[in-house]
Length: 296
Ligand SMILES: [Zn+2]
Image (tube, rainbow, N blue to C red; front, side, top):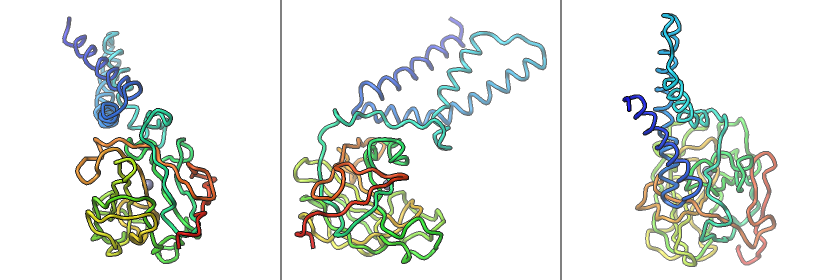
C-alpha cells in the first residue's frame, strides 16, 4: 500500500471508531470519543484547507487530481464538520440516550420562588448550549423576570443575588466563591464555571454542579452535610456567562477530582414543582415554581 492509502485507512478507521463509540458504546468511552471528534475538527479544518489549496494549484498547473486525494479530502471534511458547531451550523447533541442513561435523579427546585428555564430539557432546540457537552447533556440555566435586558447593571436582573437552597440531601464536595462577577457583555472570566458548589447526592452517590455563583456568598463548607432547603449561596454572574443565571447539572463523576472531559452527564428531573419534571427552556422556556410550602 502507498503511504497515502495507509493514511486514508488510518483516518477512516479513527473516525469510524470515534463515531461508533459515541453513538453505540457510550459511557466514558463515548465521552472521550466525543471530545476526540470535537478536538479533531480543528485539525480537520487545517487539513481540508491544505487539501483545497493543493487541488487549486493542481488545477492551475493542469495536473490530475487522484481519486485517493479526493477520498482524503472528503475524510478531512467529515473530520472538520464539528468545527461548524461553533457557528451553530449542523449542531448535534451528545448522543447519550435519556431512557438508558442511569442513574437519574429527581430534585427539588433550588429556589423558594418562581424561575424561568432559560435552557433545559432533552432536545437541542430547548437546551442548545448544553446538549453538545457530555457532562452538561441535561443541564439547566435558570433565570428570573426581568431577564434578557440590555442593562449592564447586575441588580436589574431578576435572579441576581437571589438565594439558592439545596435541592437535595447530600454532602458538599466542593465550594468556591473567590471569583468576581464579570461585567455584562464582556468575557473577562477566569474560569468557565466561575464560583461553584458541588454536592454529592445521598440517594444516588452521583453529583450536582451549581455554577456562576456570586462572589463571597457561599454559606456552606466542604464535607458539610446539607438537607433539602439548606441555604447555599446567592446567584451571581461569575465565569462564562452572558447574564446572571444559575447553571445546574447532574454527573456521574466527582467534579472536584475529575476533568469535565472525563465526566458523564446524567438525566436530571424535578419534583414538588408546578411544571414538568424535565422543564424545557429556549424560546418558550417554562416558568416553574416550588409546590411545597415547607421550603420557606
Ligand atoms: Zn449552563
